[in-house]
Amino acid sequence: MSDLVGKRPRVTARGVWRGCVEIAPIAAFTIPFGIAFGVAASTKAVPAEISILMSLAIFAGAAQFAALDLWHAPLPLAMLVLTVLAVNARMILLGAVLAPWLLQVPLARRIGALVFLSDANFAYAMAAWAKGETDAGILFGAGILMWVTWIVATAVGALAGATLGDVSRFGFDAVMLAFFTAIIVGQWRGRADLLPWISAAAVAVLCAAALTPGWHIIAGALAGGTVGAWRHGR
Amino acid sequence: MVDDVSATLAVMLMALVTLAMRVGGVWIMSKVAMTPRVEAFLKAMAASVFISIVVPSTLSASPRIWLAVAAAMAVMALTRSSLAAMVIGMACAALGRSFGL
Image: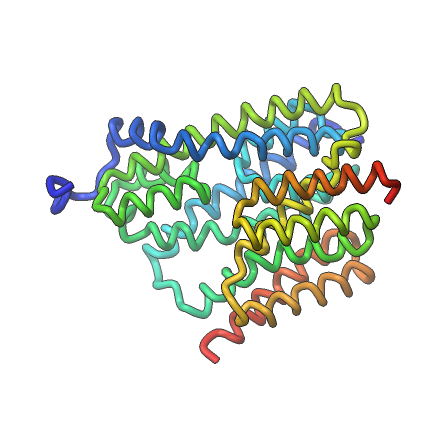
């Protein structure tokens, strides 16, 4: 480890490979989520090639599940974009945390390393960085393996979903709400979260009754964020 | 039924937005410092999006979905495993259906 100290942050092929190998056990855990997404998409009559394209191009599980919730003809494009924006806005924070490291890497490689940024390879790279790692290639390599795993698992779920018939027998119609509930509980940091969260819930419930479907998600997200910012430092 | 052209367009738009978020954090930090207040906004918003999806959908769903959400909440609080929460939530919804909930 000591030979890393003093070396400049960089991106190398060896780092990419190391990231790929070391994230493998964590990537395995995304398989059931990918399959669940594929099956859930098929219940929304999303063709397999479109759900696979989602995983390939978007590569963000929670945002993809949220998009399924709004998937009906004609597609509400503005709402889909805003919802994905709100769901993925936390990625800005991940990037901001990595900035002191990545800003020392040349621009093209820096953008490359960020293309596959997700919660998993972020957490992995942060832990490695704290231990003295300087090669940002590990972020990229770990991201690629997460990405490939996510696409393959989605394909399996999408193709299986088409043959399963009514998947509510297996509770698949509850998968998105159960997954999101787990995310919410996982983000609880203490009583300071209570007021922003209650505000979000209240605004969302009121707006769900009053606004065009989907906008209550944006309204609730903004309400929670605003209360959180306002509460900050009080 | 959603046609493939608008579906592809929607997916590409969502992908662009997501890419902007992935690259945006480092880019912003190269221009300005993130203020604690902006950070607090983004953190609170992250959870609020999911709350805004889950709470209204659950309230308007059937009792078997209430059961699934309650189970997912309890399992996540106890085990911190979102996979376990998802699987047990699904199992509760499936069980609830076989009991006619």
